[in-house]
Image (cartoon, rainbow, N blue to C red; front, side, top):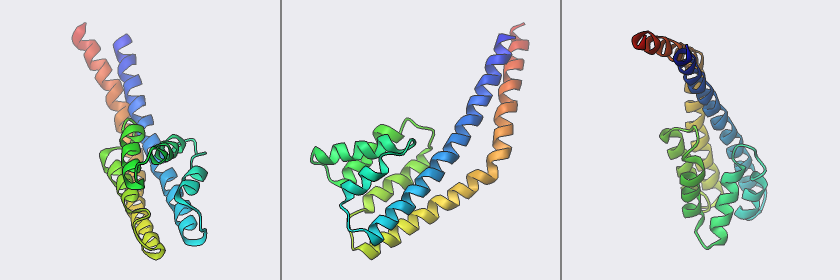
Length: 161
């Protein structure tokens, strides 16, 4: 019985992680929109922009970590990559999402304002497509994770008995 429950809990955990992953992608899309607006219309320094973004419950620690590394003398591109590895690496995001987020930081502050805006829009489009794919598969995968967790737990319980 305990094994069946454990399998079910594992299935629910996988389902919840998938849903969290969707939320993380949605939140980063919002941050890209805010970042694009700041680059387009405000004449703020990048540290000030990142500081404004650091109040978010999902990515706040990530942006604070970038600021910390920049204060230690790292370039924005390097601080961004290190922060992706340190903060977002252990999250529910997959390597595909992490790669896109890393690429965003590699392009910031490197070009003229118009070019940066186009690059941010490019990454928004990339993440939007990924988000649509995740949402499309959400119901199917969540049901699958839950069912497999419960069935796996029951099968292991039967085998052991």
